[in-house]
Length: 160
Image 1: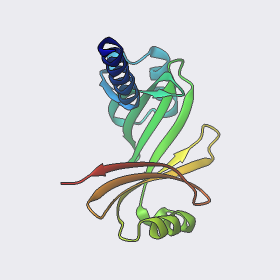
Image 2 (image 1 turned 180 degrees about the horizontal axis):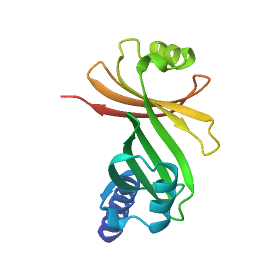
Image 3 (image 1 turned 30 degrees about the vertical axis):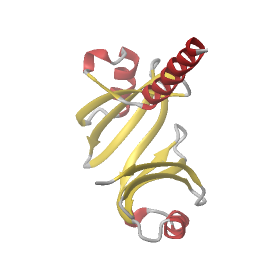
Image 4 (image 1 turned 30 degrees about the horizontal axis):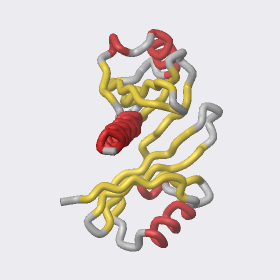
């Protein structure tokens, strides 16, 4: 019985660490990024400055995020290993958020102090969602909200 409990405990811990690791982003050097990603990025953003690379997961597959500045804007683009664009995140002013997004934040988190916002753009150029970071009642929150005001994802972190 003890062996079964120990084995179950180990498997549970491994499963939890795998899930945690899957959502983690890992910073990369330029040399660690696949060549097709470099080529696609250079073609799309020839004037980009201040690159940072990260590896993450998109639909269970490796993906490569390039964070940079272009014409004064902070932009993050996510590519598959073969250089196909998955999505673009463009930092925007809080005042540029649509009314439906502001409305749901005020309703669900009335004490929110908005800090940062991004619009998430699909490869075809349409806006998929907005990502908003804010603090509310001693918590750091990040919400992903679609264009009609539906919350798609919530991440919460306790503040000290």
